Image (cartoon, rainbow, N blue to C red):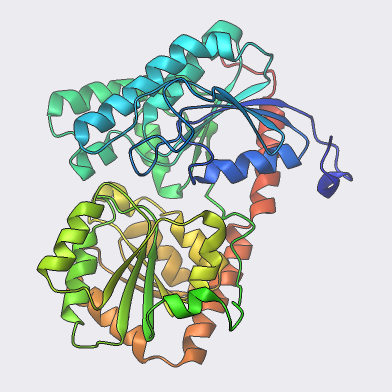
Length: 422
């Protein structure tokens, strides 16, 4: 049934197959995008794996061959067997390859219905597009590829792969993928030159940034909220998201160490990831137990409440060329909640924070500059920080608002229906 939000618009109803290695109950933006497409009246089916991110083990109730078919908000979810990511580079590579192989073998049978377009979501690995290209060849269905992460650049930047010959093979695969897609969406304008360099035709590349789920908005917790009592009192710097190599927790911990004498500055870390054991170890080694607090992983629905208790939000990335091209999706979440931001990153992410005047951005991997920026934010008045947050919220509405982006995507998909590039 067509969403009542869009009853006054004549949009083609499309049968959309989304292919994503990650999907609910894992927390990724594709969950909300799928709901948005469904709300616009489209018939959406999702081909995905067994949820195991970020812990590296299957979620309770899931397993290699368990729950192969589910319903999510009225959409059909088809799950295929794959190996969990575990810990370590080898397990991660096997996780990537197992999904791609399983999807290529099973998608022609599991996805037996008719589809007007295949939409591929790629926050890594890029191999998630291979089953889509196979289905395109078998059934002549156009493929839309939403690039969240540049390969092979990100593999080199994170140190996941160092051998030049392997990176060269990955580059060849990327060329094949880009050339095979009918439309390539990039989450950052700065991605466009890299996509073109590796075979993406400019006329088929579009800028399509991440938004934030509608639940991300400014909230005020009631005075009797348990969360108010659970968090440390003082100035709260909050990081929310993946605890991985790219996020450069070394610079966060180094800055926290420099400000350790300011006992009322607290660094709150929400999330999980492959670097969590190292972070725990470093907190102990550096004696940061009193100022750095690991809050664990929490449902996305609880994030606005946590954000409301922060004085400022934190985003960091390593100093690598590929990361300077990236817009970390947490920036949209922070902006949507009207919170000021402190950032240690380069390029596009820093540009957005500076352009919106929503916070303070310093160079990536500079712990002295990060510590000084946090201290500057700490010394501001509540009114000054609130003004930053309000400017960020307005910038979000003008550039990343959910319905605006969905309308844009609907237009592109409608034009693509039934068209397969020769």
